Image (cartoon, rainbow, N blue to C red; front, side, top):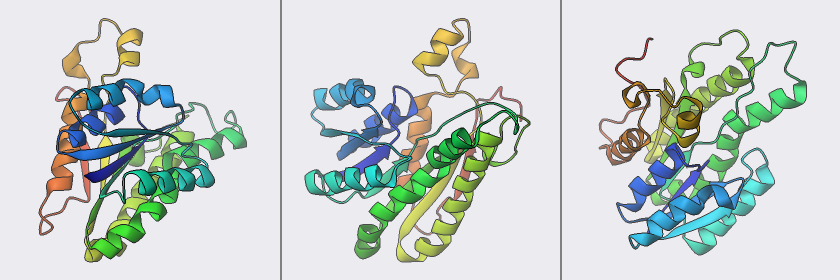
Amino acid sequence: MKAAAVLGVGPGLGAAIARRFAAEGFALALMARREESVAAVREQIEAVGGEALPIPTDATDPDSVAASFERVRNELGDPEVFVYNAGAFQMGGVLEVSPAKFDECFRANCAGAFYAAREVLPAMVEAGHGTILLTGASAALRGKARFSALAVGKFGLRALAQSMAREFGPQGIHVSHVIIDGQINTPRIGEMMPGREEHTLLSPDAIAETYWQLHSQDRTAWTLESDLRPSVESF
């Protein structure tokens, strides 16, 4: 089976992306800090005859990322698709966020994608094709007050996508950065905002469909960057 790896799988977007690619016949590496985070989507994929491999992974630790991808290669094969969906958010002013927390957020929002890309790119280059999809945010375009710990990493992730696309696009690897501008409809958001109307939130399945379309694009018309938002979102 073809293999795809999603780093940053939870009950929202990560799970939706995994389900969408599993529906197309991909074996999925489900990577998250805690294995229980991927239990539900693993059951959903396996219930319809798909293959899903849960792999506990700390995206902020290059050794953990390397060890996890070694498992992916050994048990599923080289990923044809890699999705980076990990992230961290710490709201606070520059004088309020500790250096340790700032560094942790940067590693989750940006450096982890660099660690993982180094693991999947060699086989993609050898094969002459592959897809790397990076989940961004509106913070990649503007650094709001008290959002520096998020914005710096998301700016960096966008720059990483641009650099990788220019370096590896000519070698057949499609790198795309997706700006998610709005709140995603997740179980947590539902608990926090029980009266929130669904049409004001981004549907995880709708976003996942966009990720599949990006992977399916003809190489004569690749998208480097796109932004997604609900029709009612102010921007």
